[in-house]
Length: 501
Image (cartoon, rainbow, N blue to C red; front, side, top):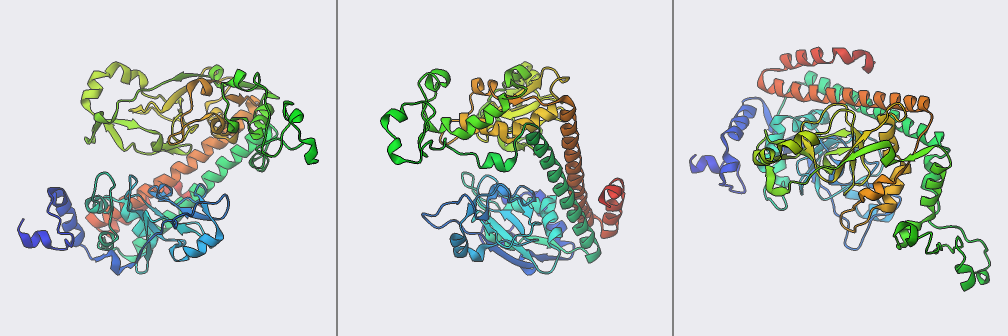
């Protein structure tokens, strides 16, 4: 390439060969062969805001959307941390609104995109993401364009840095956006809205299954959420709280829960006060007051292996390597890491034995501990050592779908919260996991819950299908024309029409 070509639309004056790969240049040429606009000509592009120095999150308040809440899908705020009303007022210029498109532009999740479909009067955005407010094309079209190969390659091409990757707002502003006709944009928007409705219904169905489980054992979410951290004081008279009283097991002030050596360290090997919070005792006693069993009696537990980063491969045909970040209770994402052929060759026998099979349950013991997912098909790869593989011993007593829900429920999550140690990365020891207590409810009730879970995942799968159709339709419109793209949509949503009605 000559210097003039290199400097064309290259404010940062990059000269690295990666930036000028032929495949990138061909895609840019293909995009510019259509009617196109730079992104800055289609709307506003704004950054988020970090918390001011010395400020922290609150237990309740206004959601603060982080990079991990943007996962190439619909933005989710349910698990986002909260900030106070006062802090929100300081960050009021960094709010997000319905139909905003978000792109993460710093860190390991860089380039993830999402669209806001919820309606909240107040919601703030992290400094690690960029907000796009579309003015001239439909937001849904922009969102799905960034999911397509023509959006993804621009994100990857403009990202710089290795230790701390960064995607500059100025580079995002200059992304090349092909302009498709309004009719196809409206059809894309319809697909996205239907996909969001299906996903919302999926979550509601899953929540119903969770509620049914808690009700079956005589608890509910509000009760669990408001359980006391310590036992209540037995006598409101301060003078009654004497050294002699403190020595009586079971007595406590608002900040003290007294245990004897035999019922504390002698039984559990733990001396940290957090372990003995009353809320944990209440939940476990409730489970043990009815039919239950320990996890080691319900499943066989298989450990995986940890190859180490030296065996990570850039080859797309390498062996998929699933880590805790690659799944949650609602599903799997494509693993970011692959393993080299050298590792595969050296460990072939182990790999064949460790590939998770359909029907098994993935269960995390490090990081986001206690996350369970029931595999609905074989996984052609291996998991990291942070993920255990559980296989139900007797499915006539415990249904795998039911067990997965129980493991993800508050009943087990509170046991994980109690047990897991580690200040930077949480670690749940296998010996503790084996002793997790699980309620074994009536088998017919288990079947009802399993049916709800399968319905939830069916709705989720349909939601994902619509997103894939929309993405491919955008690519067809760019490569061929809008008419062919519209035909593709009509052919691929026929089977869902009844459900969408």
